Figure (cartoon, rainbow, N blue to C red):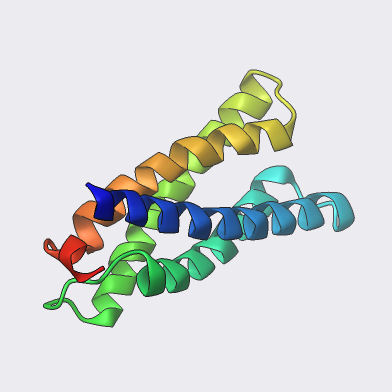
Length: 134
């Protein structure tokens, strides 16, 4: 349990860094370049996913030994693409449907997708005995 808590803390720190990247790129694209919020969200999410992969596989999860790094990255990308779809649906539903300000909607989307990310990455990317390695 202690190892899982440590892993959750590392996941949280990586998540905060990547969230700052995500929000920074989103805000810059939307406010400075006046890009539509859904297009800006897709770009910012993608940039943060790349940073998240690098940081997560370095500091949070130990990849499966029998999986190549290319395959691992492809799995990460597929899981992230599903996360992006979920993120976009939440953004669209809260901004266009519920008329919530896009930054508040992004907070909601980020929180929900964060849970999805941890669970799916733990299931699909982590070596089963990873807890013993940290």
